[in-house]
Length: 115
Image (tube, rainbow, N blue to C red; front, side, top):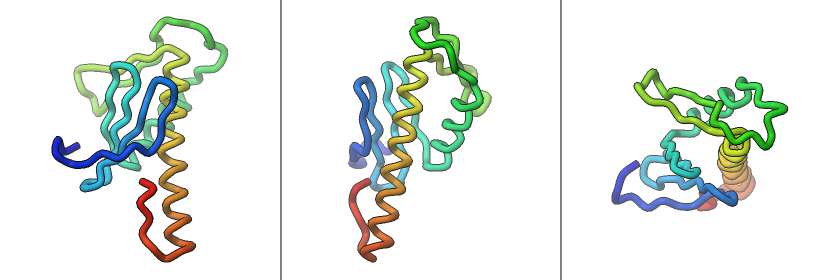
């Protein structure tokens, strides 16, 4: 993300928001104190990681047992079940908005500024 670039909100939940940078097409996903910056392919990878965690049956647990470490960095992001589900909702929402933008552009032939 570039500090001086305009970020446009593309999707939000009760506790999080996804912005898109208009100059580099990257996404900024904010949920609680986690801030993830990625591109569209990174959103797909994050969703695959979340789906691979097998987080069924843990609704209501408050411990942060779901972790992932980006690109072998010396830190990890940790989420409880509800946070993980909200992160998934944010990522899926960002994907849906990108798909909607592509459909509108394909239908109208005009660049769209949805996101």
